Image 1 (cartoon, one colour):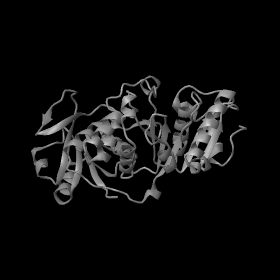
Image 2 (cartoon, rainbow, N blue to C red):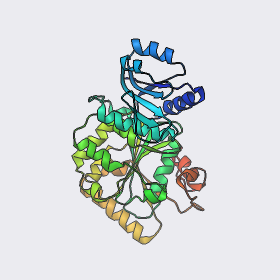
Image 3 (cartoon, helix red, strand yellow):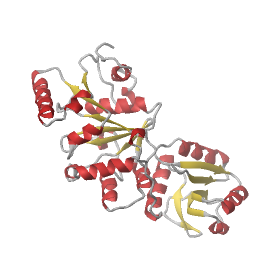
Image 4 (cartoon, rainbow, N blue to C red):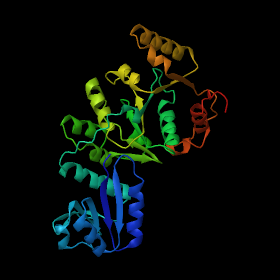
Length: 335
């Protein structure tokens, strides 16, 4: 995958290095990040090399930067008001680094000419499905805990495709953009997917996730072909593992599960849950999806003593221990 150059120029060395370090560890966007604290060094590099994005503080920006080989220049402004400096768009400097990145990627996705980056080697990205016909079986808690643990060593993206995820309440966040915006972007045949994704992605610890849709209709109206177009776009990004937290309303659910390398299915220890599982498994056999059953791992959480509140805390409690044992090849029944 081609590396894109993102340069940070700020006369405050501490700020420049801090922002550079944050940008360097971000997943999903193929940037080589450079930091400059001297305008002269930036000018020398930019006159002889292409820079895709330049973030420059307002005390360092100058008219001559228009002559540099830079695709997009954003001025890091000390004022919150939306302004321009030398014709460059300004971004508030003292907001969270993740917000700076999202804002830059949003503008960049809209302004940049289409870029075709496609990885046709499907073996390089591993899809893991988490699905159960049984409700309230800790499916999402497991999926996010699994994602956080895997993200310690891999580049992982979590995607919730349930009708009602409850993320706005659980994360105490009002998302400015979510999965609906990403799906609409693709439907318009826009080609800068990796940049649009980077403008939307949020984090739980080291795990990246796409804020889920607010309206169930946005899930129900997406066709199976559109889902597979979406997954194909994800292959252009720098992720190693995609975790799909799936609900019944996803069109082509069984074919999506078939694409997953492994499927985790939480169950509950009661007669109704067992009956639902028997119906689900019988349907898979009738419709000749036995291969889904072959790579399905049933999960029972009856041995857990309790579930910690908050997704980031779950990795340190009983659920985290359970997930680690599952990943190590155990059945997780004893902690």
